[in-house]
Each structure stands twice: as C-alpha cells, then as structure tokens.
Amino acid sequence: MSEKANTAIKHPGLGAIPNAKGASFRVWAPHAEKVYVIGTFNKWNETSNPLVSEQNGYWSADVLGAKAGDEYRYMIHTPVDWKLPPFSRIDPYARKVTNSAGNGIIYDPQAFHWGKDNFTMASWNELVIYEMHIGTFHVKEEGHPGTFASAIEKLPYLKELGINAIEVMPIMEFSGDFSWGYNPDHPFAVEGVYGGPDAFKLFVKAAHEQGIAVIVDVVYNHFGPDNLDLWRFDGWSENAKGGIYFYNDRRSQTPWGETRPDYGRGKVRQYLRDNALMWLEEYHADGLRWDMISYIKSIDGNGSNPANDIPDGWSLMQWINVEIQQLFPGKIRIAEGMHKNAWVTKDVGAGGAGFHAQWAAGFVHSVRRAVIARDDASRDLGAVSRAIEHRYDSDAFKRVIYTESHDEVANGRERVPEEIWPGNVDSWFSKKRSTLGGALVLTSPGIPMIFEGQELLEDRWFQDKVPIDWSRAKDEHGILGMYRDLIALRRNLSGVTRGLCGQNIHLYHFDDGAKIIAFHRWDKQGPKDSVVVAVNMANQGRDNYAIGFPRAGLWKTRFNSDSYKYDPKFANHTTPDVDAHGQGTAGLPCSGEIGIGPYTVVIFSQDK
Image (cartoon, rainbow, N blue to C red; front, side):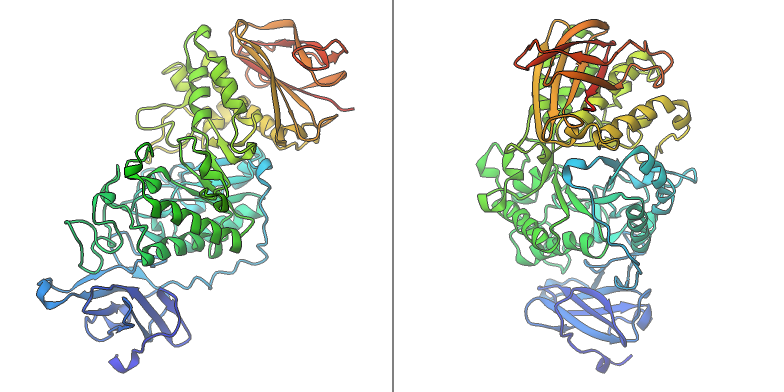
C-alpha cells in the first residue's frame, strides 16, 4: 500500500475508526519522531503507513483497505539522540485486543444492533444491586472462567430473586485469564476471555430485557501494572517512571504499583473522561462504580495529610460527573471511598465530587462485627443503630449498604456464615446470624447490595478461580427463598411495604439488655406505607414483648426470618399480627406486643 493512501484525518476521534473506504487512526504520542500503523492490512510492514503529525502531540491518517477485524499496532520512532530502537504499542483506545500482550483489533462500535433497547433503570430508592464477577458467577467449563454468555443464562434466576441492578466487577482487558479485574491493562478493551465487546453488549441487552440495570466497575486510581502498553508509551519518562500517561514524581505511588494516571495532564484527563462515557454511550450501561476513589483524591488514600492531596484528581471526578449528568442524566454514579467523606456525594457546585452514592464503610463494618461476635453481650447495638440511621446530607440513598462485597470476603476475610462458625456454614448459628445481617441490609435506609452467592449461603471466600457453587441453590433453597422474600418487601412488590423505599427512619426502640431494636420506615406514612422492623440480636426468643407503633390498628406480620420455610431447623417462633392500641411508648402514639425468635428480624405493616 502506498504512502499516498495516508492523509491526516479531519475528525477529533481517537483510536481506530472504520469507515467506508478503510479506517482512520489517531494516537497521542507527543515525544515521537515518527509514528506508523502496522497490521494485517499491510502485512505488518513497518514503513508503508506513516501517520501525519498534527503538531499538537497527535498523529493521524486514513488508511485505505483497513477494516473491522484487522489486527494492528503503532510503531513508534523516538528522536535519534534517545538511542531507542523503534518499538510497537497497542492503541490506548483499542476497543478490542487479541490479549493483553497481543495486538489491537479494529472494532466498529456502531455495528451492533441494539434493537428497541430503551431501558430505564429503577429510581435509586428502589434499586437492589447484585455484585457480580463474570469469571466466577456461572462457570460451565472447569478450569476456564465464566463468560458474558454463561452469565446471561442466569439472568432469569436473578430476575426471580428480585434483583434489578447488576454491578459487574471490572471487565477492562487484564493480564491472563483469571483476575478480579482491578489490574486493567487496556481500559477501552472489553476482556476477551469473557467474550469481548459484542458479548458484553449482548449481556447488557439481555439484562435490560429482564428488567435489570447494569453498572460497570471502573478503575481509574491506577492501571496495570502488568502488560501495560501505556507505560512509557512514546518512549519518554522522568525519574524512571511511567511516561506521558502517568505521574512521574511521588504522586505515581499506589498500593498496586507506580501507575497512577496523571490527572493534571489534559490528554490523560480526556482519556479517562472518554473511557467513562464510552461505557454509557456505546455499551448502554446504566451507571458507573468507581474503584477506591480515595487513591484518586490523595497519594496515600487516607486524606488525613493535605500534603498528600491530589487536587487534580478531585477536579477530574467533578468534571466527569458533570459531563455524565449533562449527557446521561439517568445514569447512576457510585464511588468506593470507604472514609465516610460526605463531600464525595455533594454536588459539584458546592465543592463535592458529584457522585450519587458511595459504599458505606460504617454500615458493613459495624453490622458484620455485630453478627460475627461469638457472644451476645459483645454485640454493639449502639454501633448497629448508628449504622442503620447514618446518611449523607439527609439523603438515605446516597449510600450503598452491604455485609458482603468482593473486598469483604477475600484477602484473609471469609464469607459471613464462615466467619460466624468456621467450617460450619450450614449450622444454625451461621444461618441465623448471617441472614440477620442480610435482613438489615434489605430493611435499612440506603441502596442495598448483595455479593454473588450470598443468597446461597456460599461458604468459600472469593477467589478469581473458584466459581459459585450452584448446587447450593437446591441445598439452601430456604435461605434463597428468604432473600427473595426480603427483596420483594424491600421493593414493595406486593404494595404493602412502601416505607422500605422511603427516606425516613425513626429508630425508637433500643433495649441493650434484650439486644432488641425496632425502627419505623416510611415514605408518606399510613397503611401500606409505614413499616415497623423489629430486630432481635440475642439467642433468646421473646413473647409479649412491648414496642411502639406509629398508628393504632392491626399490624400484619409480613416477614419472620425464623420461619420453618426458610430452614426446618429454625424455631418458627410465633410472631402473630399485632393489634396496636392507643397507649404510647418510646415517643410513638401507640404500642403493642410482639413475638420474635432468636436472631430474628420481623417486619410489620398495615393494610388499612
């Protein structure tokens, strides 16, 4: 192919973009002396297709005959006095790669047919999130990771469970076939071992058809560090560090390597912004969850030392969140901060980072400690109560609450039932107290999230090579049924527990001796809205136990976690409906007597 076929392109897009006559290529390599594109379309000839310098750090050209499916790389020449031989790099904007150490593949993002995919996700107060790792969620071939296709097969199961949002752990191309995903090598490429970009689009489309939103977990606090073609991309670096995409001073340091992106460099900021918007625009994702933003905000991730702050990281998050709000106002933006920083979810105009919600460290740590504690006297009801009531800026749904996540059930920490009684997850104690925690997740104010397998009483801690044991869906069908019932109540699917979707809570009953708390949840109050939740965190059932109620009349028992239907070994402690009378208590106008089993949650509401 002659060099006359190459001309500088006239559009701002980056990467390889197929067109009617070939493909355009555009790449940022400000320190390069020459740049060529090589690939299957020119038999990997290293000089036949030069890119033209745009005099702004970008290089570009249209190449006739290049087409979707062709493999390619960039061949970069540095100044002669650098004494570096020409080297090749994968396109930073490659939507598809052969593997993390292989070649880019020209991909047409417009070729996929979405059909009538006009899905709208549920409002934040009605979401129930299921955190999913594609590689372990549904594995069909031993020794190989799960795929988007295998995960699609389980979407009807999730719909029946009541899930209406999936958060997929990172699917950016990573090194090897097994990974949690938090080591992205090619941020724009969808992991090939999972199926690649079209397979992910099919997954999103299938989820939407089941009424389930898809939230993508993105990693911008570091890249790699293995097989990282972004490293010294055009040959330049300072202080023996990473070059144009990374900080080249002490700000490069992260717990995962010296690969923190340079949030102050305009082209890098654009790269991250383009990546965030890609998931929403090209893949129809319904939101983003940002991994550990504390390492975007500061060098050491704790924020206690202003000298370690990275102001450019904060402004980057603000900019991207404003862009998403303007272009995709219905998409949710979630942060993992883990420092209970209210500014994470404040509006950008007020100086906040502009996220809708953040993972609630205070909730998971307090509730897990309480249900795992060996003896009842050690259960800190005060900490549990504060965890239930906490909110940011008076908005209950600015936090995501959970007892299990990929972080909480790995790296030396077990699943909650295993923590309760190691080696005996099917024991009465493990079942009762782990579901006590699950019930608190699904009745407390916030956006509830469960981790894959939690509903099956999965006993094995999370590893990227250990798949979910689906035989437990039969063995633990009772526990699965409990989660199904709780989610139905949380989403008000029967129309009698609207209060669990509401902003309001009054934790009015606190009995540290009996280890019983009770709280009132409501949206607008009244029948079918107000919900009373009683929680017994002791190994002793109670009868004729008096608590307050916000309204007189019959309060029906909607849920009893001690029921035989959830496990034949449970006590099935009597929890009759309550006829609340006008004698008030604990600041409420009425009261009534309840029955509640050991380590049990009971839910009441009124029909009229």
